[in-house]
Image 1 (cartoon, rainbow, N blue to C red):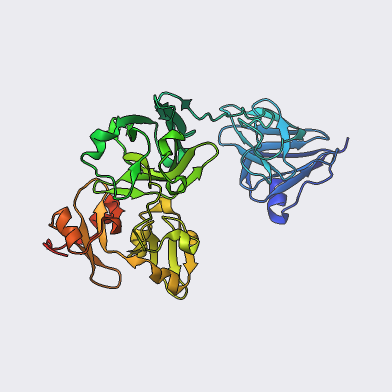
Image 2: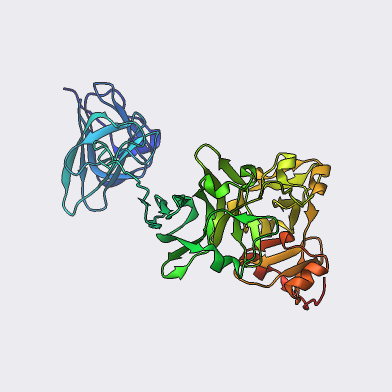
Length: 431
């Protein structure tokens, strides 16, 4: 077998690639190769020794390459064919890139010969594990905790769900996606006698509670109460035919208590299974309300459904950059600037804003009444500049608020970040 011997200096000057030689020997005393060297084996396998390699000697044989390494020696081998290399102290990284495999050799304290042998190819990208390139990654099964006790520990990887049944042959259920929480969270459902709840939380005029119970949903994470979530949760409630015998089934809707009044959620009624479903990103009291037969809705306000929208949709008019969110009662609120808009990531991003006609935008009344979710105070937001505003606490009673032309349906819930963003102005004693 002929051998071709080239000095390192020759390689540095001419940037020679080692291709198609039966055997090549390169010897030096810890010299640095500052150019990529491509090596082809007799079976056609090619790979590259990357520049900045340091070795005492490299010997290319028909089916192997022997690297003589010592202290400070470093060799990196790259294979665009994603070849697997074997040998003592040789580990192939198949997971670093879909375009190549990589081997890194580091010299020991004493001079050592390390033989590297191409041996097969890496599995398809993403299916390997470890770093040897030959062991499939262990499969990971994500489970969603599910209970029928009204209590579940939802996880940040699998979410969770729980169902609570009542003695009226009904139930309430919550489904929590993993995207809604960032840590394990205890979810609880309780059913409360409606008499004790509505005595301090009056039911809207013309509405009736379905069944004998109102449901309280709570959550705890890290010993702290959780009331709002990063994504929507799905609530499902069951009802019986006898419970709605004097109600119009088409008027059934899930309502929640916002601290001031009951607010309706966009709801889906399944009249075959007698269930009603709604989405929410916060916890409080929830119930099903309906209207009695023969009664007509008293409101003439626009509803999102009138315009092909749903409650909570983000809208902007054609040719206008102002973004609003609409509620079920015909009101909309303005996001004063992009900073505030980004505080509500669970609503979606810019791509989720629906472009509507100016007439559709104007069909909803713009409200400037805001309430922080964990506070009873209602604020009036005063626009003080193009992107600035001031909050004024409405220091009036609920009855005065109504008598002066206010509507609790026009009060929008804001989060703590937005509350703290505004400048607080002087209190107002009238609308």
